Every structure is written in structure tokens, then in C-alpha cells.
Length: 102
Image (tube, rainbow, N blue to C red; front, top):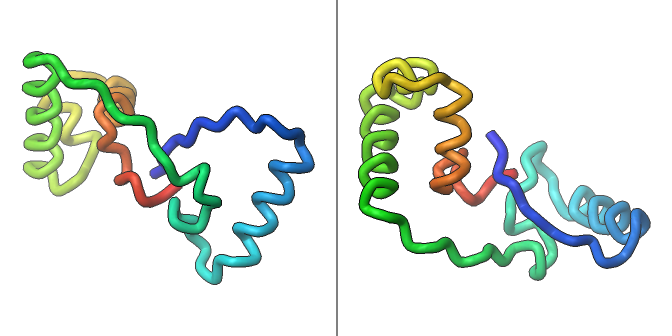
């Protein structure tokens, strides 16, 4: 799973390359986590308040994932939606692979 980080990269490809190199040099595992990134990339934008319908949908998704032991294909079947729709909703509600990993 991956968590999206949006960053404008006000510098250029050199800035991106140097950032990636420093992250890779500082990380001993094969998984890059948010904590490995420079501080300005660790910040996340505050999420807007969910509507009542979105709150109910989010709760249903969490329940379906719990019931299916995390199996997203099975959870999508339980919810009566397509797997790609489930992945889109997971991103929308910040439920995709947790906020700690990229």
C-alpha cells in the first residue's frame, strides 16, 4: 500500500534527487516511512469535516475490512462496490495503508 504525499517541488529535479538520496542513505529497511522524510514533507494537510453520509460510508468500509480480515476484494463484495471504487474511497477517507508508510 502507499500513501500519497503531495509536494510542489519548488526546486528542480536535483532537489528531488537529493531528497531521495538522503532518505535512502538514512534508511536501513526496504520500507520508507513518513518519519524518514524531511520535516516539510512529513506534514499533512488537515482533513475537512466529513458529512454524515461520508462518516457512515467510512464506518461501513472499516466494518467490511474488519469482517474480511483486511481482504479488500472481499470487503468490496460485502459493500456491493467494485474493488477500484473501494481503493478510491480508502484514499479519500485516509484509510489506505495507514499514514505511516509510502
